[in-house]
Amino acid sequence: MLWKNTPDRFGHLFILIHWLVALVVYGMFALGLWMVTLGYYDVWYHQAPEIHKSIGVLLFIVMVVRVVWRLISPPPKPLASYSRATRVGAVLAHLALYVILFAILISGYLISTADGQAISVFGWFEVPASVTGMGAQADTAGTIHLYLAWSVVVLSVLHALAALKHHFVDRDVTLKRMLGRSAD
Image 1 (cartoon, rainbow, N blue to C red):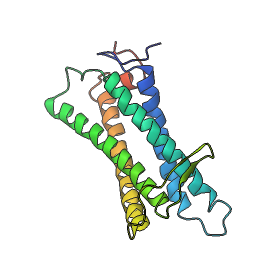
Image 2 (cartoon, rainbow, N blue to C red):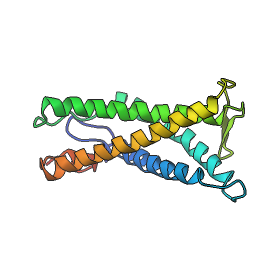
Image 3 (tube, rainbow, N blue to C red):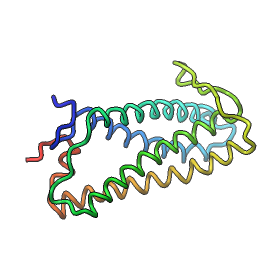
Image 4 (tube, rainbow, N blue to C red):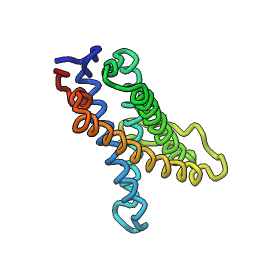
């Protein structure tokens, strides 16, 4: 099993983290949209946000591991067939996805800890509130969180469409590499 990336292929750990983050981000987006529709007396009114916060903290940990792993095991080299614009666009899109994801997670933390309460992660451990009492912290962070969540969804859809374009129009191995298949 190929764990580390090679110059031509993504390793299985990188691929696993990529698809795990993608699934979790879309699941969290759906959960977030559903949560805000709940009424105070709904049974999920208090439970859904706790699940959302716990998964958010775990996602932050996974994202840190992802960045560290990317430094330890750099991704494969771009295909020779990529134009300069494609290479620059890919770097900028990936950078934007990372920055937006971290910003979503940090804004979620600021929402959740605005009242000075720690975040309990499924009862396993707590993340203390370290930044509190900044006026309308929860409201401001909430607005930022919402817009960033929509931004990451739109950008990730464009990312997926670019991968499909590479596969079906350019007929190159971009998508195959991210699915763990050989570039042959």
